[in-house]
Amino acid sequence: MIIMINGPFGVGKTTVSNELLNELNNSMIFDPEEVGFMLRNIIPIDIKQLEAIAGDFQDLKMWKELTVIVAKLLVEKYKRHLIVPMTIRNVEYFQYIFEGFKRIDQDTFHFCLIAKEETIFKRLLDRGEKEGDWCFQQTKKCLQAYRDNDFGVYINTENLSIETIVLEIIQSLSNRCIQ
Image 1 (cartoon, rainbow, N blue to C red):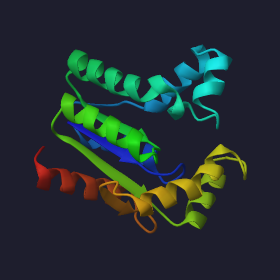
Image 2: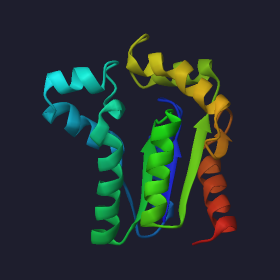
Image 3: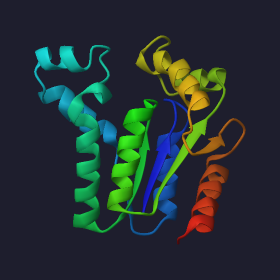
Image 4: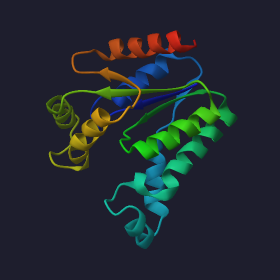
């Protein structure tokens, strides 16, 4: 099984993913951001300037492809469920990755965590981000993309505890197939 936990920076994806890891046997976390960091470090600047003009490693052509390839290798090698926290708002990239994950494991699910912009900004500040940095710049874009497009199951984290969010995900998964 592959569980995608999507949402803007600061909405609680990592915290929810870590708690899910404790609740789901035989699972591991795969963060596609690590693939992006690797690409950012090895791709020459002239290529980055052509492919990722805005500085977002998700725009690097290999990012979405490697995200699916690494997930496939992890599942094949370690035979574990993947919990995949990620901030992805580009519908084309999302569909590519989601469909790629579905080819790896038919039991692929996507949850999009959302909250009010003010709540997300407060959470970002609470975790030590500086106002105006990359995470803040992406919040409006993410929330707009999640409103304008179908990103599957939405969970409003506004007034929910991490335990409640995780329970909601587990119940949704149980209703759809597993455990």
